[in-house]
Length: 301
Image 1 (cartoon, rainbow, N blue to C red):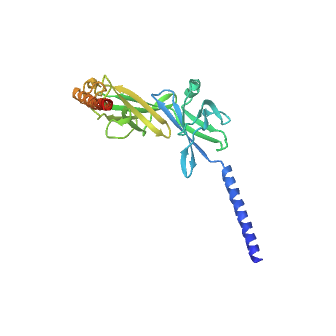
Image 2 (cartoon, rainbow, N blue to C red):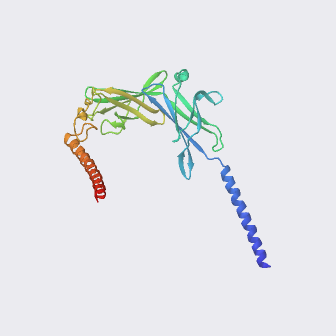
Image 3 (cartoon, rainbow, N blue to C red):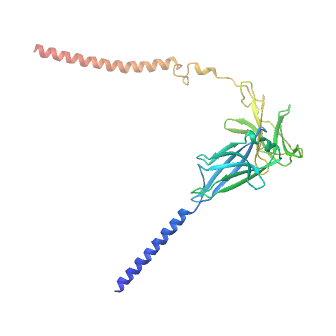
């Protein structure tokens, strides 16, 4: 009797624990994971800028990119606090990123103020709650110039009171544009603007390969600044070494193309091929001859 009571109680406890676990699992499945959206501002050659957005969420304790997220981008706010001008509606890719140019239709709004607020909005979905992210940027520009002694000069200015005002204390990187990224012009990784908003760096990469006329592309940039975002300017200068095409490609050499191998190598290769196939054909000839001799012996015998 006591054993039956104990077994029944144990069954009830296990049933309650299983139900509680199922309830917790259902509750966890119903929870919305937080979606984190960040905005980055880029200005290239002081033209109408563009934005990049990055969507990610914390999965298994780590932030993972979220692809397929629909994000609406707005420029500035109206009196109700909503986005004033729609920049674009973008969908993030596999890496959780998307890019949008500020359209020409918003150029009037862009020119009307010296600072702007960019707004990224996502709607509520089955996986994530709605989000609203903002980024405030002051309108700025960067210029680049060169001196006769091969020094590079860059200047950062902010648009205030309908005029460009130099900005002090901004970190500027100066380099040379290459295929794999920007190569710094000297030993310094970055330079800080003075009271005139200028930085000056010595060009030490002498003998750098350029294009056919010896031109290289100099770069001055401000990266991830809290006030001005990302600014970049490029300028071509004939400070490189002229690029000369290698005419040895079509000459006979071990590294030459298919029909430009050395004669001795071609002779050796064809000799091996002819020797192997010649031996095979000779063996076939002998086999046929042996069969014929065997048939004649049978006929004479």
